[in-house]
Amino acid sequence: MENPSLHIVRQYFMPGKAEKLSDSDISFILMEAKNKLSKDPTVYHLKSPLIVVGDLHGNLKDLLHIFQTAGTPPEHKFLFLGDYIDRGPQSVELLLLLFSLKVLYPDNIFLLRGNHETINFAEPTDFTKECKAKLFSSALILISEVFDEMPIAALVDEKIWCIHGGLSQGYTKISQIQSIKRPLKTPENGYLVDLLWSDPNCQVQEWGPNQRGNTVVWGAKAAKKFMEENSISYIIRAHQAVFDGFKYAFPPDKSVVTLYSSSFSTNGTPNKAAYCSLSPGNPPKFTQLFKLANNTSFNIYWKDGHQRI
Image: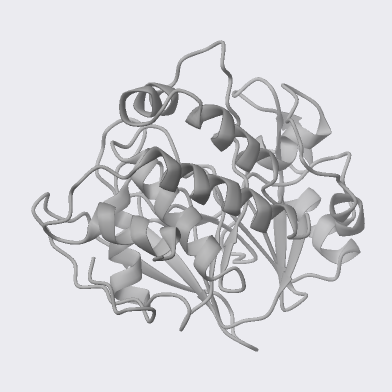
């Protein structure tokens, strides 16, 4: 019997193969992804070379553009910083593709949790509406369980800290974050929320209130202290739309950077997407991608079966 996780890649993305994926295949992918993620540590310790990807927000075309430009697993390793869902039109397809790749290549695909990877069943969102339109009734519960198993951060080459949101006054040591137990239901506020929600801000030195309401902003002094205490050189985070796809938080210093990998921002304004390439002994390298035309096709080949997307 064909591996269902390879089957989903073909069913959704092979030209001329648009037939509906079965509920049992989707259930299999979700349960296997949950199992794989539950075995991963709360903080990944990874070695470069590695590709880092920021917010995608349901923009499948941008993910495929990155794969076509940067390469694909298992030849390349990928670290995703979260916010896979909402806003874009294909959150379900994007999420299921990433989960499929995690099942296929667990040592080459690393998925962090973003602030959007929390299901509030009481408040409909773009993603919950999309799930109800495309998936079976209990799929959302299974997806929520997968989200609760997602790791929080990654440390690359022991020097590059990667996380969705940012810093927290309650978690000043990487060892503290490593000790966070999963599965994890994220609260609405508190120090844990800061890891997924907080933002850098050049108007403050250390800490200040955040306009998002449930978290904080942090300045260059707070970032420097965190990096010194944990012996790291860079912080790569996501969580904010930036016009050029990446933006240094405290220029001219380049040690803290926001990475955004969707070519369509919250306010509907087209922007560049970007991804980050990490290699041993080198500073992070950023590649910008321009928004593609709607009719763009892709020629992407996976090692297993050479499936064309």
